[in-house]
Amino acid sequence: MAGGKQTPRQKLIGMMYLVLMAMLALNVSTEVLKSFLVVNEGIVRTNINFEKKVESAYTLFERALAENKDKVRPYFDKAMEARRLTTEFRGELKDLRTELISMATRTSPEVAAEMDPRNIRRQDDKDTPSRLFISLGKGAELREKIEVYVANMLELIPEEERARIVSPFDVTGPFHDAGGTKVSWEVANFSGAIIVAAITILNKLENDAMNLELDVVNELFRLVAAGDFTFDDVQARIVPRSNFVALGETFEAEIFLVAFDSRTRIAANVNGQTLVSRDGVIEFRSPTSREGLHTVSGWIDLGDERFPFRTEYVVAAPAGSVSADAMNVFYIGVDNPITAAVSGVEPGNVRVSVSGAGASIHPIAGSGNRHIIRATTPGQATVTLQAGARTVGTFNYRVKRVPDPVVIANGIDRHQTTVDRATLAASGGLLANIPDFEFDLRTPVVSFTMVTTVGGEFVEQRATGARFTDQMTALINNARRGQRFSFENIVVQMPTGNQAARNFTLTIR
Figure 1 (cartoon, rainbow, N blue to C red):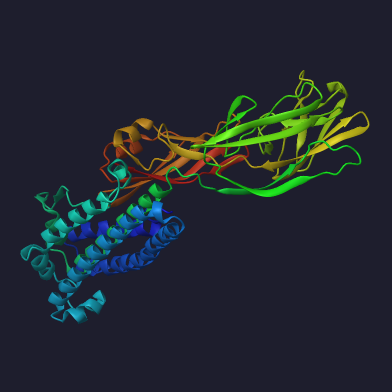
Figure 2: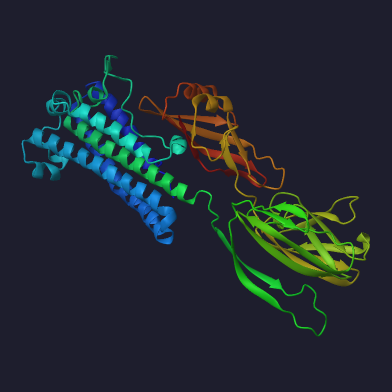
């Protein structure tokens, strides 16, 4: 499920909102302040789109409930409470917006609820927001309701998981007026604010509520699946009744689909050895030193259950074999080592060739039967073994690009989304690597951009290389709780040339 992170459009709206608030504090002209109408309409459109995203999250929850009521029900009930709390809070914001417009335009609540802010005659009206939110105390009431709403939403998440949720609301400050005097949240937002600014603030609070709602519901959904053995890959398998068929006999095999979880580490006992999976699959290799019938048996432990297995294979001469020393695929741009041999034939009498995928073969000097395969294009490469004039066998391999690099702040877990300021500053820069990749491959960061917002202004810094610039370090050291740092336009040096890496964002906690 997607997280409640802001889209670029939402970031732009937030930046424009902060800029216009600063302009308001400087008492700029009414014509400029009307730009709030543009920001407000953008927030309204964003809220409409966000409602669809939130509803999609609830739809996934409902499907999970239908599949497993006993397990999902406790979390689903909490998700429904999150929906109720958010709906109630958004309703209070809409009532305040209606009351504000009704008071300013002297129209009925029914008319005010449907009125477009562009149709308000006095869009520079500063008296009504101050009277409603300051004099009549509605601002202080709203601040208290925000505090209660956020506390109730976080109560839905287990205490040990609560740190994963970063509230978009800030009602604790400190807040200051244009003269630098410390003021309350309601004074900072509504005292002297023109009516279209006050309407925009209320709509932005509604957007913040939906962000928090989606984060809470997503976290509840994650807790449902925590610890499950789920399936994320399905493949076809064919299992022969025998791996050796004499001339005149019938070949028999079972063909079926296999579903497995490539993310779960499983362990198996195979012929007395303990082996651990990689990408959800346990690879078993056993050198052959004698001909005849051989047995492979053991079991896989999964929770409280044990799943036994058994198979047999026949070793016979002559037989050709090719085994990839690192893995069962070839990667573009790196040296792929293979060992090629034909039983009973001296290495010097075995000829190895490769075709397809722009591949070439290079013997490793002094090794006898080891070679390097280099490929240039994705597809399939075929390795052919010949002993004298006889072709012993052909072996097909997939040729793939090197997996995309993952870029993180140095020393910070790649799944982490929040970080304290000191840790981020101490990281010193970015690190690119390829998780679980078999080759020892350097992938240095060539350049990147760090983006954040300081005092309502959009700040962008560019770095060459992997290390933070002095300006970047200063921005991090001066960051406030909840401030987001986005790392974008990341370029990483790969075997086939420079390549763009995925952006990521860290929030200061």
